Image 1: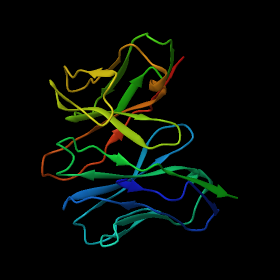
Image 2 (image 1 turned 120 degrees about the horizontal axis):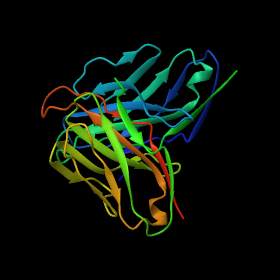
Image 3 (image 1 turned 90 degrees about the vertical axis):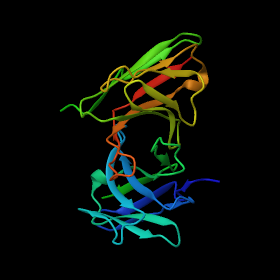
Image 4 (image 1 turned 135 degrees about the horizontal axis):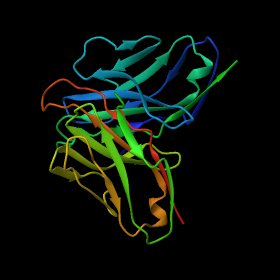
Length: 118
Length: 116
């Protein structure tokens, strides 16, 4: 079974509008972390935001917020006031504390390509 | 502070050739990782290291080897390159304490490798 599922291969959003990128995850670990990374066309991976499984409040970082619904196992990324520079691939990733065999590796989804329209 | 650096940026190999992808971090991170990213896919873990002298396999280790003689360096070796190894390779590092706070992984710029 997929550990991280991103169901939107591509999304379009008008500049200055808000957009939500979906991410659902599957784990039996009681302790895990969820990350979002941005990959522009230049190829580098840029960390955006982190949510811990025990965090009571949704994470926010500037224009990025994470809509964490633990019971539904979803961790959607919300980008407010979209900018042209937000056009990129966005990856959701999970780090499991106990199932990761000590690697603390990130397990990635397949990504969502966001295009911001002027 | 350069972060995570990788060389080369691009490389074309012939089938059966070997090469080493270099990765260096200057953040004194204990954990280092090698991932590969195939077209249209997320990243998959090849190998990781929890500290100098300690390495272990990830999800897709076949055809690769690693070593970690220092905290800073974590080279990835490809022996007998195959077309299936055509991919973008990312090195990453993080500071991780078992049971401690979670810190993000910092990624290098990637190496685009083509095997023909």
